[in-house]
Length: 505
Image (tube, rainbow, N blue to C red; front, side):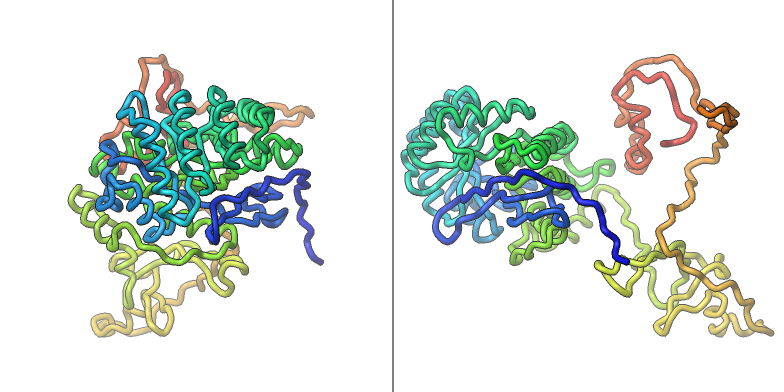
C-alpha cells in the first residue's frame, strides 16, 4: 500500500516581485513552502544571482576575485557587460562604494551618471547599492533615481535613518527598494511597517537581513532568515512576506581566510575563497534567499549547479569559466606549497588489487540499477584479502594471482574458495578506529526503579590554565583537518576549558 508522508500546512505566500525591464524582466519570490520543499508547496522561480560590480578599480580585493575582471577594472560599464555576457549574471549589483565619505567621497551627480550608464548598457535588472552611510546614500540614491527614471532599477540599502527620503523616491519613480536591517526579525518587520506608512507597497520591498560570511556570523543570519520565513509562511505575517536578498560577496572575500596566500596548512588560496563563497551562498539558499550577490564566476557556477539539481530547475546555459584549467592550476599550486594529492583512484586499473569495504544501492530516483562502493587499495602482501580488477568482472585476488605465470609455477592445487561477498542493503558507518578507550559503566535505577547501566564520567578534571585557540594547537595541515573533522575544536575552543576528553568527539 502507498505510504502517505505527513506534510506541513502553510497559510502564507511570499510575494512575487517583477524586476528589470523589457524581455529581461525577472520574477522573484512566489514560494508557498520552505526553501526547496517542492513536495509540500511551490517554488516557481529559481533564485537569481547578481554579480557585484564596483564603480572604481578596487585596491583591497583578493587576487582570485581580480583575476576574472582584470581587463575591465575601473570601467563599470564594461565590467557589467562582461558579467552579463560572459558570466551569465541574472542581475548586476552596482556598488557605489566610491561615494563613501570616509573613502573617495565622490559627488552624488557623478555617481548618478555612472549608475545611468551601467543601467542603460545592460539588459538584466540592476541593483544600485550605496556606501552604507545613511545620509550620503539618501543624497546619492535620490540623484540616481532621477537619472535612471524609466529604467526600473532597484535601490538600496534603505535603512530606518533614511527610509522617508528614499521611500519618497521609490514612490515618485516606481522603484523597488532593498530594506536593510542588522540581523533581527523584529527590526526587519518594523522597517517594512515604516516604509508602508510612507506609502511604499510591500510588493516593492525586498528584505536584506544582513548576511555574515562563512565563519563570521553566518549561522546567526541563517537563524534570523529562518524565523522570518517561518513567520511569513506558517503565521501568515504579511509584513514579512517579501523576498530575501543576501549581499554577502564582500563579507566573504574581505575575511583574512579569503586573502591569505596558499600554504600547506590552508591549501590553495583561490579554491579556498571560491569554496567559502559557494558554501555561504548554499547556506542562505537553504534559509530562503531569492537573490544572491556574488563575485567569483566559478563559485557562481557551483551554486547554479546546486540550485538546478536540488530544485529541479532548468540548468542555465554554460558560461565562461574564470580560468579554463582550474584543476591543473590548483594542482600546480598544491605542488608548490607541498600538499600531497591522493592517487588511489588512479591506481585502480585492470589488474590492481583492491578490497570492497562497503557497498550501498543508490536511490531509485537518483540512479536506478547502480551502487556506490567504498574501495581500499591493497598491496601485494595482502593478496589473499581482496579482488583483482578485471575487464570481464572481478575475480578474487588469489584466483587472479593463480592466473599469472609466476604464481602458477609452484601451484599444485586451486586456491581456497572464500566466502562470497554480500553487499550491505544500507550504509553502515565504519567502525570508529580513533581510539580504544573503554567506557566504564555504573548501574543506576531508572524512573521506574529498574536497574540500567550508564556510562560513568569519561573526562579528566583539570584546572583552567588559560585561553586556548584550536587553530594554534597544531601547525601541520593534516592535524588541523583532524581537529575540524573530529570536532576537537569544540573541546579546545577559544574559551577557558577545564576538561579534556580522552577520546575525540
